[in-house]
Image (cartoon, rainbow, N blue to C red):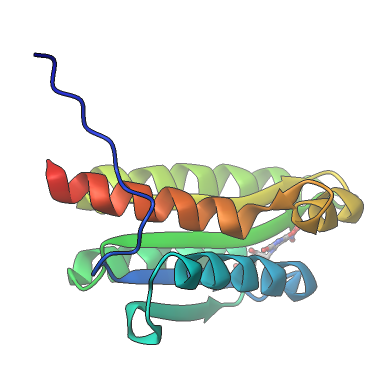
Length: 154
Ligand code: INI
């Protein structure tokens, strides 16, 4: 019989850290609200969720890596909002965060979830922070629960 593994969409006894950027806080606040609400609806108690604020998206990875290495969390949600401006700064921030989050996964073996919006306009970001296109914080929370549970089965 073929063995098939799938993570449960449940918080279980897992602990989740949310590392979130204050830059574009009007958007990232909504991502945190969505993530926390989703985790709690799937059984997480307050003691299972830790929210850590950092100045900007660039600062997420150093903190998320330390959190992952601590061994105290089953998954780390990285939440931020990068919105294109009139210079190419956006490209550098996007490059750093996508590479950094990937690296945390490889280096620590703790699932680091990429919940960073990378948008051309503020409207696109708002659409993905609890309006037309859902909430990227909710998606990140679901991925975190599924991965935390799956990693426990391996
Ligand atoms: N940080 C963000 O989280 N989002 C952005 O849109 C953004 N832009 O475009 O500048 C941004 N920049 C700040 C960056 O993350 C660092 O905090 C800063 O460079 C200091 O290291």
